[in-house]
Amino acid sequence: MGTYVIRRLLQMIPVILGATFLIFTMVFALPGDPLAGKCGERPCPPAYAAAFREKYNLNDPLPIQYGKYVGNLAQGDFGETTNGIKVIDQLKARYPITAQLALMALAFEAIIGITVGVFTGIRRGGFLDNLVLISTLVVISIPVFVVGGLSQYFLGVRLGLFPVTVTSANPTFYQLMLPAMVLGSISLAYISRLTRTSLVENLRSDYVRTATAKGLRRRRAVGLHALRNSLIPVVTFIGFDFGFLLGGAIVTEAIFNIPGVGGYLFRSIRARDGASVVGTVTVLVIVFLFVNLLVDLLYGLLDPRISHD
Amino acid sequence: MTDAAVAEVTVAEPREGGVREEERSLASDAWRALRGNPVFWVSAVLIAVFTLMAIWPSLFTNTDPREAILAESRSRPGDGTWFGRDIQGYDIYARCIYGARASILVGVMTTAMAVAIGGGIGMISGYLGGAWDATFSRIGDIFFSIPLLLGAIIFLSSLPEFFNDNYFLVIMKVVLALAFLGWPSLARLMRSSVIQVKPNDYVQAARALGASPSRIIRSHILPNSLAPLIVVATISLGGYIAVEATLSFLGIGLQPPAISWGIDISAAIVGLRTTPHMLFFPSLFLSLAVLGFILMGDAVRDALDPKTR
Image (cartoon, rainbow over all chains, first blue to last red):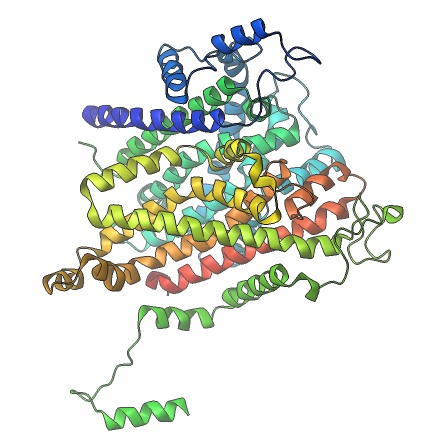
């Protein structure tokens, strides 16, 4: 177990370096000049421009710029935006909001998705099963920005069940509820289908038959024996999904006016603010890798046949 | 007629043992299952209609989608046009028809490119194994750890102005971004199915007979490992269409004057409370197109998987 974790952590290093390099290269290639418009409606004085370029290493070629960036990053320094604001402060203010949104979406899709999957899985071919199969397909095929706009209109404006937009820098649980449901809606459909398929397959397996044969009630045989093993693909999906939720939050945040990392990243790309973009994505990649390591460790808990030794 | 022919053949060439089993390959078996599946026909019709729309939009409408009649701006469905007019006075029906081209082109070309890159790399790492496998898997991990939407936004912003020259280049820009970030999941899939097929006896036999690696791959490994790739590629085709619309919605993918459902939805979302028809029709077309490909992938998977029969 210990060596497995260490090996996985070591494997993460090249992935993080590669991903940051990829992002860094793309940001380096962004057209436009970060100095444009910096000094009002006239070009910046040469002395200021030179000092600015020196400070942000803009004169160095790409590999050296990247090397300097990684060197600072290894010491926990995310650099400054071109406005002189520390990127780490921005990330500290915004990541918790996006993380809360993503976690709420994850909880929503996992709880409802698995419940629906179990109910349709144990009554395969019934009315509920067919209804869920069709409605999940419909949900999957509607893009998230359409779901967002429609639910904002019907649930927020028409029925007044939820706040229409987020109005403060520290959104409450209630304000984030509708955005989280929108964000998690597509994955909810995937999770319920995945749980259903996987449960149906496991219900036919020998160990479930044994459990029933030795006199366990159906509830226990399904809940304890079949469901636990069926959750492995579901947990894998949820692990991958966490990263995509953080990334996909960009659309939901735009619709509901949430001050998370999505909007920040979007503006930073437009403003050609390299440090912010690379910093934001780096944190995202690291979170994604750690969540997936956690998922792999969870396998051992769910299925005793899987061991990491 | 066919039955008679089969009967004749059976009489003419009786087999040893007297019982003639009909020879059925996986493909003909799958086709037999597909033909009986109404879901397959629904999706086939949807895909056929949208493809026809993309190739030959004038078959469906004579109206120019760029003909702006401002006097009738935001008119309701039925006031002289089928779907009403949008804020620019464009005929929404014509916009919906012409919007299919961008979506289908992006979907098909991205899938083709991602399958070529992902399938090729997956084949190499699965077949050769060892250092190749390790290298390609790590490279795949790097791309995989960057969320598709975020990566695409940065990638699209960093492309030079050259790509905004004409319609085809603008489409290619989105295709490149999505294929660039979308191949790793297909590569992983291909790798795992090649690893499953490789140890089979017929592959070993071919090698023992002295077949060259390219021949082994072409006539033994590829046909037997392609099925999962086809299924996932069909489903992701729908997904790429949704991502294209999302990028256009965010103002990063296609730009006006290109016609795309995403652009129209993004323009309509401001009038959600007053003119919902402007949002409804492009969303409907977009969702139906995505649904068509997802249903097709689902039907093909069911047909190829003997466990579901």
